[in-house]
Image (cartoon, rainbow, N blue to C red; front, side, top):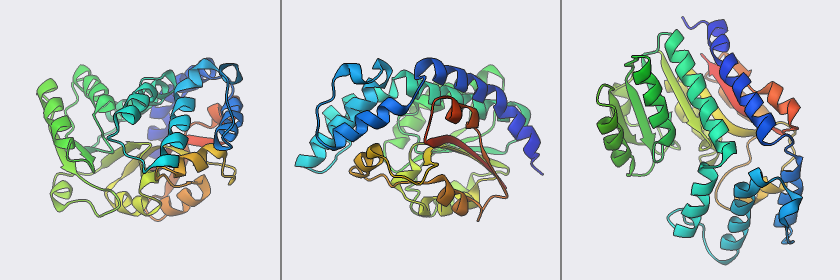
Length: 283
């Protein structure tokens, strides 16, 4: 049986580190709300209207508005890839990545986990960092990585070359659909599943696909706490994301998990976030 108190204790230190980093990095989230409203309205935004740390997010919203006005959004577009690369390398997203790796590594060092599962792996940057932590602490839990893109096979191959002591299996899985039977066969309970900023592309129904296979779930998503759709939510809907509220997400999670915990409450209050970004769910 999974001890909830132990899991919550495991994530305290990574969440405190995340809290301190976000306070130093951003301080206050409200300028992004103001700037996103201007971008959505087609108004000019000047650099002194927002902290420089938010620049990659602002540039992404500008690009979304520009591209979707003229054509369909295509992630393979080089201009889009360059801007997204800047976002992925920004301090804000490094904070998210650090916290994710910290939470997962802390849990697997403390609690007996059968299999690690990651959805929306992408190029595997965060996965690689987690593998480094596992090797460092001599942890050999099997890892299952997945993505809807066939490129996941290349990511898996690169990770296996870099970390030959680890068992890493890769699968093409569009989480709007049931997981492949071959993936299911690789799972040993308890399963710790984690993801970052991908579920809203599949809608709430994606939770119904991942919930049955996860014993512990770490969701790193912008889950709206107010029920009010902000300008940046409307902008991102133009590229296929769905507006997720914490309230509705919790209702879907409750169908599969008995314990749901908001991990970043302290940070939400400190920097005026209208969202929670770290949600823990346990069966």
